[in-house]
Image (cartoon, rainbow, N blue to C red; front, side):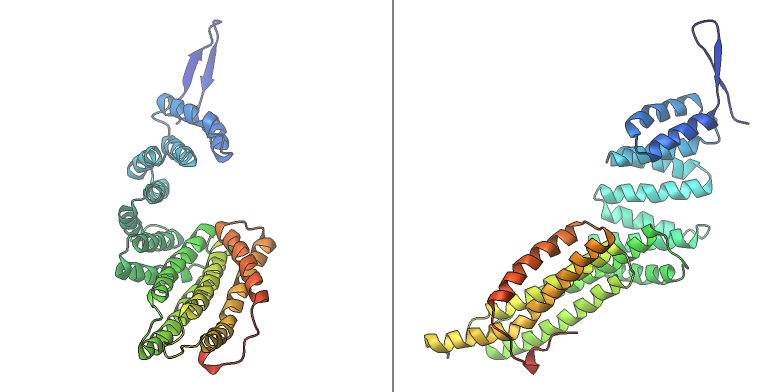
Length: 333
């Protein structure tokens, strides 16, 4: 039975308060993000109803309100109390939120460990465990622990694939984890420098093309998750990699044996023509991102980046020469 609070109203009368309708009202405030009103009243609720069966719920809602104000340490404190004291379902939700607070506090290593522990809780729902495993992978990537990150990602994707209809947060986590892995491929691509002597240049060119295909494949795995925000991020990054490859090609100076102005100019023109298909691919990818944003009503930093690059590349394409076919510079499909 829930406790009662009987208050004197100052005129000889009394009022009786019970937890349920009061917490229902406070829950509405929290869900409507009216936390400036909700926080002091939730704190009063905890003071007035310490024996309430919904005490843990009030604690978590108070934590969520502090999350909305980006007061991560305060929020985590409430969530950790609930994780240790509430009934199992609420405790598990609170523990996940506590790990999320660590993420927002920049404590990727600690967040990864907490998520991994939560992913191993056998009593928890399969979807929640999959989400925890994926967020552990995300934070391991952030912390630079790549071997552990890839292992966690593989396990997380297996768990995610077994969920019939993943919720948006878990779908987003799967896409973000895939994106973090793809970013590592992108960084490996960027590290390969095209430079002389000629034999080294040819070897590096082959390596860079292979790395481009490898990175692109990884970003395509992100889009397969079908989360609009992370799909936009992945396609934007594909466009940036194509543009980067184009820029790397045209940045290579003519060989030293080409000494006259005419031959060096002709060399630069030929390289620019051969590199142009990569710039066209970059443009096409950024157009896809902008179109996706317009179609689903998504406005994100990735859409903004693609819109800006699309305009710049469009001007460059219009100013450039038509590219001849060249089997040595096939653009990855």
